[in-house]
Length: 305
View 1 (cartoon, rainbow, N blue to C red):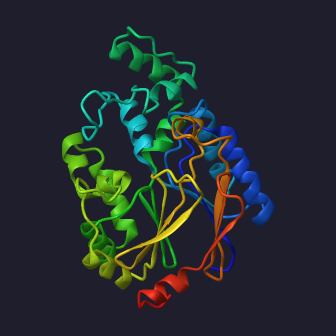
View 2: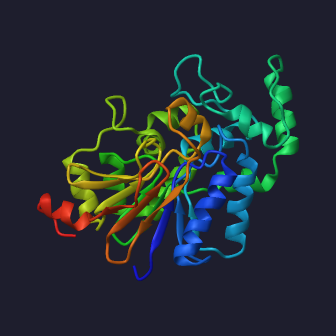
């Protein structure tokens, strides 16, 4: 890597926050700086439509932007299919239109209200009429993983099985498998390990990552995972799980989460991965830029950088 690489996580319908993050990136690395977006572009915030417009337009203009899929993007994608599908991993009583999930705000950004009493078939028909096909195609085409040098970018995390798949067959194979399996029955898809990569928080209910999986990733040349999904309240965090570095880059940009989790002001910031391997984290919720030295942490675990 010869120039800085930037990561932005979990925009959640906040087009103004996206614009501000892109302004920060352009001021540091130029308008054509490479950016990896870590998924969850939709839900909760007021302008999911505007966020998707910006991402689609930027890629159409040739910007070196990588866009990965988050679990909220998949929920929107599934609703926009000819027959809507539901996320079977949710708790009973939760659904895409639950106030904690954010589907109501997403459809509102397209001018589609969700009244208290409306049949799903009628709401679905209105959404199909108003959501541009380009947005549905964008969601459907999002990849799960991106690899650059020894960095692996993903929305949520990884487990032993998928680590073995990446080590044996590479990231491109996993992305192809992801697109194929996401068309399966929701229960079949979501109980498998590939869906785990969009939702894991390394809980007991999630597929595990152990030293075996980390060894497989190291064999594939991967030393650090860059992820979103888990809201951080004091900026980016760099941790190690069994010797695999995890750069957690969800810095709570969306207003809904900030309000419900007691964070003040608007969320803003970006993550900068420098050519020398150091990482700079900029966040609204930390008083100064954070500087991380992954090589030092790897040495602590007896691993070379």
